Every structure is written in C-alpha cells, then in structure tokens.
Image 1 (tube, rainbow, N blue to C red):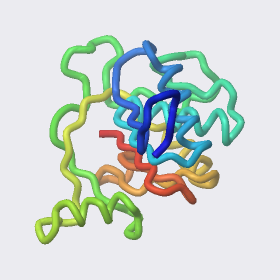
Image 2 (cartoon, helix red, strand yellow):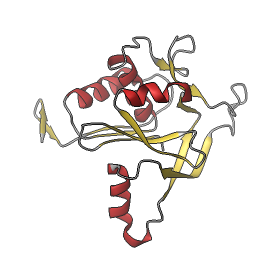
Image 3 (cartoon, helix red, strand yellow):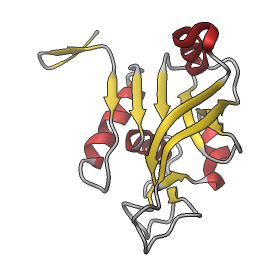
Length: 176
C-alpha cells in the first residue's frame, strides 16, 4: 500500500475523458506512478496521457502532446485517426465492440485475460471502444525502445490497444 497524505491506495487508475480538461492532473498521476513503480491502469485518455508523459519525461520530447490538445505541437504522440472526419464529428468515433489481439505472448495483460476468462479465453480481446485519437504509428518504435511495450493491437496490428512498461510490475494501459 502507498500513502498519499492520509489516503492509502494500492495503485493508480487514470480514467478517460474528452478535451484538455484535467489532462495535466492525469499527466502528473501517470508520472508519479511511473517514477514510483506503482501499479497503474490508464484507460482511454489515461492511456494516451501515459504515452505522452513517457514521451516528454523519458524520451525528452518536452512538447510532446496529443493533436487534440495542441494541434501545433512538433511531437504529435497521439493523432487523429486518419479515417475520421475533423469537420463532421457526429458518428465519426471508433465506437462499440472491437477485436484486439496480443502480439507479445508473455505479457502480464495476456496472463490476466487468461486467468479471468479461463477455458473460454480464445486469445482475442473483445472490448468496447469510444475514441477518435490513437498513438502515432510513426513513434511506436522509439517509444518501445525506451520501455513501453505495446502488447496488444487491433487485428491489423496498426492501432495500439494495451501497453506495459518494462521493469515495472503490472502497469497496464488500455486504449479501450
């Protein structure tokens, strides 16, 4: 357990959201969990903030950001999905049930899915999605060389869905 003031906790959850409201607090929570090796779960925007925090503070890309928060940043770590429409926002999100699969068979996330689903586990992940932005594919190799491992991707292998950090117990970050 970890104490933060008078509050005791065993891990950090950084939830989703839309727009830049609360993103600096999410980023600080991501940084705190990474630096202190605290179990961490980042969901949707929480996933994106963890990737941005890693790019800023581990890779040294000080202005790394999401295209949603700063369209003029020189390091767009999270980008608008290319098939989406920036002018017609209604019905343009990646919504609903989506299939992903593990590309790193020894991952902690896969072990958790196997444990939770038992004999019913097929090796595929079927989860709900609701987003317009994704990790910039051009930066995946650089991020992975510096400790992020994208262990699950969409069926095409193009979209990052679950990542883990090397050397840290159970820091799972989900794009879902």
